[in-house]
Each structure stands twice: as C-alpha cells, then as structure tokens.
Amino acid sequence: MMRKAALLGACLVLSGCSGFGKYISDTATLPGENPNSPAGEDLNMRRVHGYSTAETPILPQGGDIWPGPPAPLPTLEDVEKDRIGTVLGGGMGESGPQLQDGGEMSVSVPEGSSPVKEPHGKLPDAEPDAADKYGVQRGTASTIEIPNGDGTVTLIHPDGSVSTVQSKKTISPPAH
Image (cartoon, rainbow, N blue to C red; front, side, top):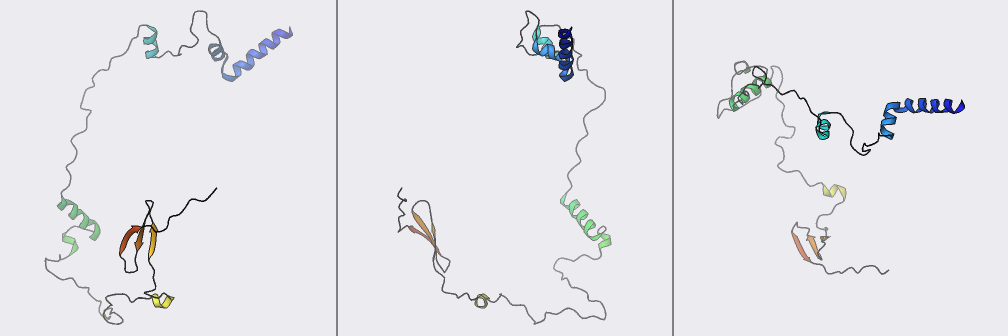
C-alpha cells in the first residue's frame, strides 16, 4: 500500500511542474518513434512528415488598398512664406513693410528715451594682450617636441612654424 501511495505522490509532484502529459512526452516515446525528431503540429511539420495539408488560398481583396500619390514637395517660395508667417505671426501682408533691395535698417527709439550709445565710443579692433597680467613673458617660449612612432620628431617653434626632423635621441629598451 505504501508503494502505491509513493507512486501516486510522485505522479502528482511531477504533474505539478509542467503537466504530467508534457513530462511523459518529453521523457518517453512509443516504440518505433525517433526520440530525436523535432516536435510540432503546424503546417510545415505536417508537410515534412508527408501528411496531406489543406491550406486556404490567399484571395484578392476588393477596393484599392494602396495609398494615393505622395503630396508634392513644397517649393522654396512656399517654405519662405511659411517661415515668415510663423516667425512674424502672420502672412506677408501682416508683417508690415518689407525692406527693399539696397535699403537700410534702423531701430526706432521710443519717445522720451535716448538711444543706447557705446560707453567709450568706437569698439576696439582687437583685444589687448593680457598675458602680462598673469606673469606670462612673451618670447620665452621654447620649441615643443612631439615624438612620432617612426623615429622622427615634430617640432613646433615659438613663431608657429612646424617641422619634422630625425630624432637625435635613441631610447634603449630597459634591461631585464
């Protein structure tokens, strides 16, 4: 009686994992079957095994399923009109007078205020060299050497010129 209970308990435990039918089909085969053959019941597997297959043919559908032609690309004039309308908040007529070719643009100043003037007149053409404030002495720069992998050295001179020369130093590998 104890053996029958143990067998029934083992069957219940095994069926709880993945189902008893799946367990048996994965572990045991009927005599004459190949245990290594792929499993499956879909249309292609039926064809492989040589069974007859009934398939529904693909029938044409009524109506036009294709979309119409794409919209034509906008011209540059259309793009410019749209851009001006978006930036200025309206169409060409609402943006006010247009600047004619060769015309000049000016900024209007509200009444009762004066236009903003530059504090010292004209702006300088170049920024003054501030290296002296930070202790950098011009003319004391040395040549920068950049070693290349082919035995040459690229030299960058203080005046900005660049040259490549053969390396004078040969570095010997460290002794082991």
